[in-house]
Image 1 (cartoon, one colour):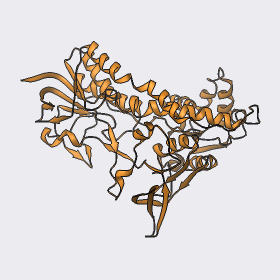
Image 2 (tube, rainbow, N blue to C red):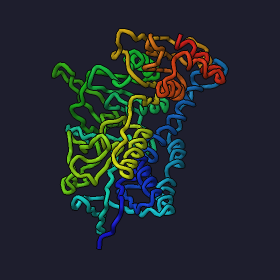
Image 3 (cartoon, helix red, strand yellow):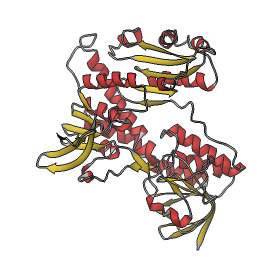
Image 4 (cartoon, one colour):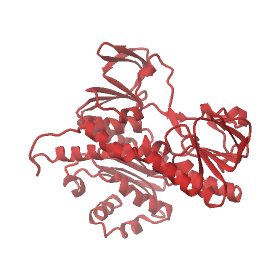
Amino acid sequence: MKEEYDAFVIGTGAAGTTFAYKLNAAGWKVGIADNREYGGTCALRGCIPKKVLAGVSNIVDEHNRMLDKGIKGNKIFIDWSSLVDYKRTFTEAHPQQSEKGYIDAGIDTFHGTVHFEDESTLSVGEKKITSRYIIITTGSKPRRLNIPGEEYLVTSEEFMELEKLPKKIIFAGGGYISFEFAHIAARAGCDVTILQRGDRVLKMFDADLVDMLVKASEDAGINVVTGKELKNIEKTSDGFKVTTCCKDSEKEETFFADMVVHGLGRVPAIEELELEKGNVALEKGNIALNEYFQSVSNPRVYAAGDCIRPGPALTPVVSLQADIAATNILEGNKERADYTVIPSTVFTIPPLSSVGITENELSEDQKVLFYDMSQWYSSRRINSGYAASKVIIDESSDLILGAHLLAPNSEEVINLFAMAMRYGLTATQLKSMVFSYPSVAYDLNYMLK
């Protein structure tokens, strides 16, 4: 017998949870399934545990920065094993709590890999499911590199579960994952190298501030190497030999490490769904969707989250996508996502944050306000050697079009700029609204001067 649902959700991360609860609240009969622990990437294998690790690395770095400036003692390092134990207190209970929440709400839960049988039928293990709507929120997974030895790569998820960190680590790729985990590993006393294929790392951020962050990274003991494409990984008697080739030539260079971490991108985790049986078309390896998050080939199917493109791969974004898509399922296709004012941060030390347009997108009536903030009070009081801001203003309207910050607490301050941009506040209005936060008010007044 087949079990019948109004909506069946595949995946229990932030997007799947948003779908399930919203459709359930509308009185629909909802089922949800996952082939892993309930909770998804952010709660179990991504943002939450990463921020726990990054938080401790910040505390360690703050102590070391202030030695002989009010703090006596010796340089300290992360105690990795106890940190991982502490991190698990945030993740271990979550799957059971998550599933209990669904059950308490009247949402049926399933465990196992989901396959399409036809346009409206799924199999979950031995069970058959039919549903008016099928929702895909299966997230993403590390991209396959198709190079010899890629089986030796350690994923970010595996990195966070290590009981002990090796002495020498290579992070392959120059994006979020590599930089964030490299900064954590450096504060644990590891010898860290980042290998980037192209000439630029963190390409989604302002180039000038990225250059400053690279210097801060190098000061922390991180070796950032660009123009090196990963070609081969070989296991040796005492670790791994990594062979790279130069971007503009066939010249090879080798690096040695105890571990090589995958930071070379992620792709939608949709292979096991057998989408072709459900008439769910793909476009360039992604589920082909219209502007309402609906499959272009099977109108019963909607999708959101890291398993689709476009949209920044950020938890608030995937929740936004799911909320909009659920509304479109309930009320008919009418809402679209707006990604124009979505701030993002790479949680390095200091963090680098961005929202809006970059300097490369300037027109004639726009100006850039750039300040080196390293000697400002907010930076000097905690001996942060690297801090800068770049804000883009429309001269005729005084509207803020973009903001880029490299500074302690930039992950919080960037939201003030995002709020101003979202609601059409001018730079003058923003400056006048933050006097209850003295250090922020001081900085904003000068950033926007």
